[in-house]
Length: 120
Length: 110
Image (tube, rainbow over all chains, first blue to last red; front, side, top):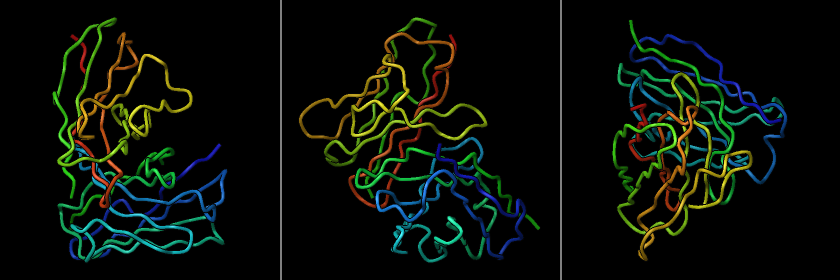
């Protein structure tokens, strides 16, 4: 059974960098059948796709966040990570990691999510 | 970016009712559409992918379909609403990057 678990600080100061890690269990992150992705959801609002990474390290980002986002992968730890720089209150949200099935790009397994608040 | 517009934004229904949710893409997306269910405080759960393929373990009362011929209008039908189906439903297109979601449809108890 594949499971994803987000981890990282729940509170980040404005202008600093948000860093989250997603640990994958029950499957190899090196599988060529999947991408690995981050999605966020402000409280009471809809879902926003942040970006995705392939096992090779190839990435795609949402244009609205591209200048501030870096997604990386560590196959030795079966983890992938999100860094979002220069955060503001608008980045306060629940952050989910998920697995994307290639090539259809739907998300079949999700983590439980982690809440990140941007506040001084 | 492809815009995904869901309607209605909310619907009130009773157990046993048939509920239909619509998702319209701003351009044709083939069959590259998925539907998710999200309950309060939980992560979204995949229901349907490639417009009409039921994810393993999802009850058959959920049905996805493509309406029309321009590959931009999709529906999610819940044939007989059950108590556990009260949730928010999202569509998501994967024809183009960036991946985009609809705004959600909240299914509430009447």
